[in-house]
Amino acid sequence: MNAKYILEMRGITKRFPGVVALNDVSIGLEHGKILSICGENGAGKSTLMKVLAGDYEHGSYDGEIYIDDKLQRFTSTGVAERAGIAMIYQEINVELDLSVAENIMLGIMPKNAIGLIDWKKTKEIAATTLEKLKVTLDVDTTMRNLSASVQQLVCIARALVRNPKILILDEPTSALTETETEALMLILADLKQSGISCIYISHKLDEVFKISDRIIVMRDSNVVSSYLREDIKPDSIIEDMIGRRMDSMYPSMSGRIMGNRVLEVKNFQVMHPSSKEKNIIENVSFYVRKGEVLGLGGLVGSGRSELLRAVFGALPKTSGEVLVDGKHVSITSPKEGIKCGLGLLTEERKKDGVISTMNIGENMTLSILKKISQHTIINKKNEQVRIDDYFESLKIKAPSQKTNIMSLSGGNQQKVILAKSLLTDMKVLFLDEPTRGIDIGAKSEIYKIIETLANKGLSIVMISSEYPELLAMCDRFVVIGNGRVVGELTKEEASEVKLIKMASMV
Image (cartoon, rainbow, N blue to C red; front, side, top):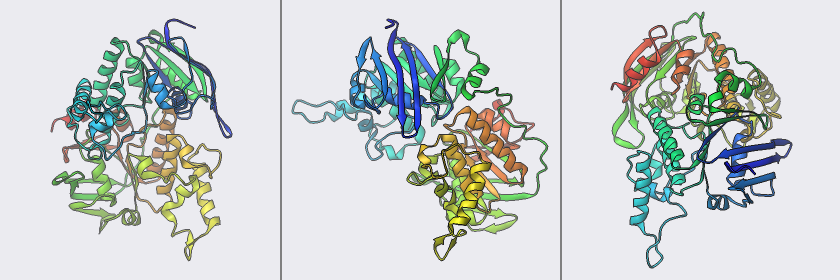
């Protein structure tokens, strides 16, 4: 054993039916250091961490785990937690109907002299932990009333309150704002100084390069390379992740001829989802032309997602007009939105985009069941032709079209959701954070799909919190701040500094 390591995982092999998810993987984590693990979705990163966190119990995998030179056999997450491991999962995992304090202290609530929960102490500890994260939050608030980014911060607080030796963070910033992400980076630096060792997984490579003491790259269930901080070369790491040279991340997105206005939104007002006393969108107007990619800029919470959901019919509007091809349309439900030629890829694909019990093909054709049915009976031959077309054209990576949707990587799930929209007679596609939580190779494929669709004349409205992505992919920008349009820029006028400044100056 190596004394400098607080953790060693040796020869870990994990199999699922027909799949080797981890193939003889060995890693070491130094005391008080931050180890980042990079790799495309499906490379095995999260599976390896679930082995370490006790989600996959000892005996369900081959190999050994040592903490402080002691062999560990985790039979549950509780056993792993008692050994000093805390994990913040990629998917936000909270009890929505419990309070912030209850979520943070779940399972470790202090008791008073007669054995009942000491609520005062529970709330004090929860509040103190949030203060360490520089989060100001009423600990009596019910989780259901909080945004996804704040819920994620509560998950981080829940991990820290357990005083772990080893903290695992799996895509912890996917739902955080830029300010919250910067705060988390500072917190991780403080944790490192206090002696806590961290394993960090993120597709946001700028974060990885900023905080890592060492980087391990995984591909196809194996560790393929390791880099010390002083040896980090972004291009080499990206090439290791995808197994080939990445000449250009983004397509050119130039040379297209844009047509007339396909969609016009006028004077839109949308009620705040958690407060009937105010609007989250106030008198917003925008348009998008045939073959144009319009970028919606703004900070998380500015109302961008709510605006698109309301135009699509998934949220009620207070007032406003929608015109498609110059004609007024009434859209009060997603079904009517689809009929009018609109499609929406939501920010939370697993919550709103897929049905987890269905396979790939079934999820694809959900939007056209009437079109492929006769007397309520699905024409299987007709359905299969359509599934075949998009399974091939979108290059969905899966054993078969009958594979369950939840077994796919994030990028391939996104392609299935995209196919569901493309199967309709769509004129305008709304993309809400289309590459969130997917790996760099899959991002490149999604960008190429967007380019192809725009070249074919589809109008696209795109939300992204990653400004380089927004700048590269969009032809024009409308910036939303506090529910209002605060500015508009052409591609030539736009820059990251201008977009951030415009979004912040409200």
